[in-house]
Image (cartoon, rainbow, N blue to C red; front, side, top):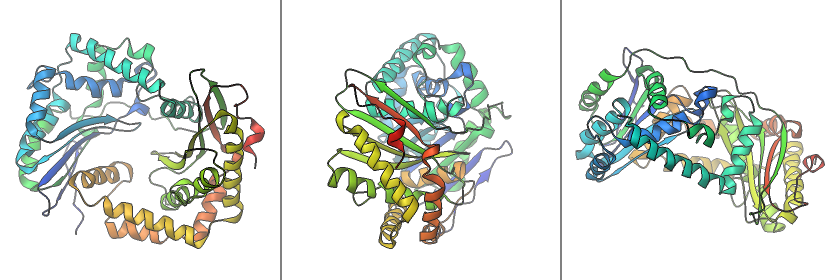
Length: 422
């Protein structure tokens, strides 16, 4: 199947449309190239605040009740999320409901009302969301990691924002952030499914006509990582939660496939090094895994686990031993082949619904600078060699560059610098 060619408007909006004749659904996403890392010091949490508050009423749907009813009438699914580098508003419906979906999403993107009373109520909801995140150790230890690893840069900003700042946001702040963010050059539209290109572009045009045509300033701060070790105690916890992270390449690195496969060998499945050693052989934890967090200019290869406080230091020590074994001895051919099979399987599965195709189009366009066919992506995975994994392990798994965040409860469960040297 040929790759969809982008339509780029004179104002810089990119539009990607992939007709899928074998499905009866269609998925549409409006992606704004601005996330929490593009916030200024006085704006932390505003990207997420805005994602919430546009749902409190628009010109076509003035109240939250009317907007909710319109969403339900679509019969499908509408949602939104905010990330470090993007905000997204998307939906999936039957093909016959496409015009209504595009109209609703377009109104969110161009005509929010920002009613002051509604925003006060929604601000309370967001503060509850922050409190809930703080009550979930896995979420909180991850935020601790970001705050330490990229300290001093906007990439360290918590996406939800800090309670003391969010508590001050209202219609004025939301409108100001909206006005300099939701602009035509910042927008990418991705659509896949039972969609015809010409009629879809006609549906989009009134929306695009309402967007400001020029780009407003967004902070561009290079996110340099730094090693750190932070232990935090909370007496209400029964387990210790842990994130260890090494600097890793960004989205567009030629080593992205090798890094992904290295992460899988290290902690990506039930046959991974960390799962077998820490859970199956040693019984030190219930869950452990590794994953990549890539961004435009940097990234992290992270390892996360939870365990009893008394077992934390041994878990960390044995994790470092496994990292050293891969760094010093490389990986086996069978491990690489298993990782490649998992990666290929994930790619194929991602082709099998309109929503996953839409997300793939947007991800490649925004983060990787262009589209690649399934065959090209498969070839990139197939081309990774044992030597590539060895090189990446030696480059990345350096204890001197390690960031560590620990959230625990009892005395004696703190990780110490000597635990991080295999």
